[in-house]
Image (cartoon, rainbow, N blue to C red; front, side, top):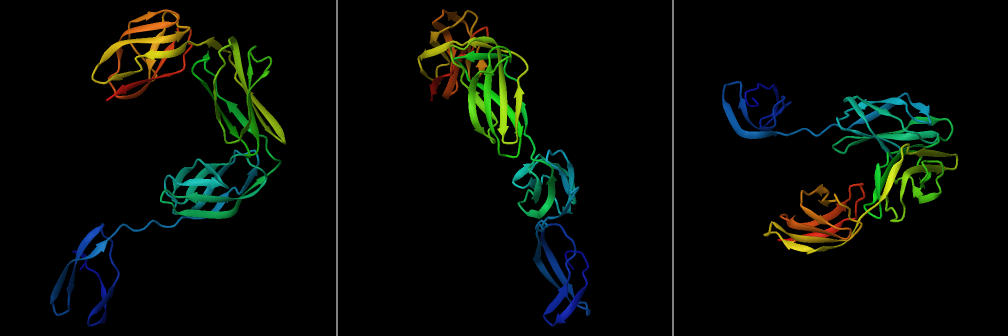
Length: 327
């Protein structure tokens, strides 16, 4: 008996029995052996059930097993022992997967150069299934697909950097460049960045302090030998002069004081400006001149480094200034 489960056993010899273990929860169990003459021997906690190791996945085929180089083909991966959260790789490129059940995953092909490729499925436990030449791309070398994110409505010249983001689906060979228009997209004469590699998808633009316009737009160009693809922002952004912080006094404070008088010195401060700490606007009474902001009760309750900046009513935002609160 395995606990209370009657198990059929075969006699090997006087000191050995052969049997197949029945299903049981994880843990230690007692074994009780009863001879045909009724004599019984109990072996307490003699056998331990453990969590079985996960089964190795297999990848049998992809359906369909071919599609255009432009991508967009829905493909069902058939195999065994797939786990929820499994990852699929087309060549070296990881793709989002939809888990159907332990035998099927769904993916959508990206664009890629023509030819066969290997598909790999990796379960969350790290076990891998792989199938060579599982899918074949057919057609010409595809042009990249580019999408530029919207630009901020107000950009600070000489202040906080503006992050430009985009996505590119490509065969991995193109380079990219960013251009600026100050006339609403009629021309793009200013190069912000060039020869960006295919794995880059954002750029921190530190806008020159002398660049002011109401009609800024960005163009992304993705260039590869077969084609050049362009995407542009479609709305004008305003570039405004940003205030500048030169000094915050005092630059350090002790955490045991909840508030203190502080001066922020610099240039370009406007009436109605606000002071931000770590990106959060502070509710403060301010005395403002173009070069000095006086704060009667500046909060600093949390020890550590904090970042202070000034935002004018027109949206122009200074670069951050480090303010330290000691223990």
